[in-house]
Image 1 (cartoon, rainbow over the protein chains, first blue to last red):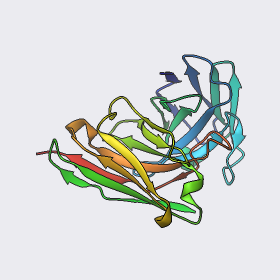
Image 2 (image 1 turned 180 degrees about the vertical axis):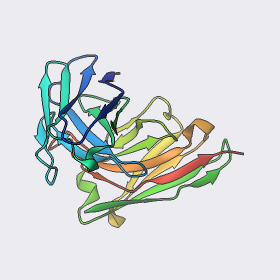
Image 3 (image 1 turned 90 degrees about the vertical axis):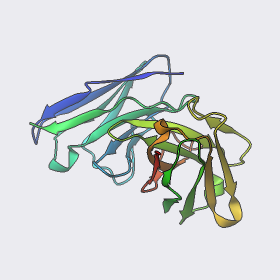
Length: 107
Length: 119
């Protein structure tokens, strides 16, 4: 099974900050990766699909990039509603593994 | 466009439960659908996926042989039959649309249904 390693596992930041979360795959996954945001007690919400494409309705401050087996999610200017947990997921093959999550907290 | 899960509850270890996932606003049978669960305080865990044609089914090793997905296309409904339940199956279960034939990302999620396995 492909393993996804997210870093950091937690992150403290302030409103207006630029933050980047990394997801490293144990083998090549091409662009078969998505990013989700999950608020406490809520279902995950798709932010980025195909590693770098912005889901409809998601603010443009969110962006995704891919560099070989490493993918990044960047939030260019944090807003209060962005403090949540973020997950990556690979679609290269089954099982459709998730990263362990990154909890973004207010500093 | 939405998905709504139902069927969760409290069940004893070794028992069975059937979860349902109802689609509205789109044709569920046109998409791969997946189940994802989240144990209390833990991260997301992919559980299983069923292709649009129902010809391909995939299960996590942790549930293989115990969980079975099926569809009722006439009712726009998908089910997850869970047997031989264990304490470690306790989680919120989400169904999600997985348009893998078009792009990579689960774009529609239900609100989740809670399964508690306890005596």
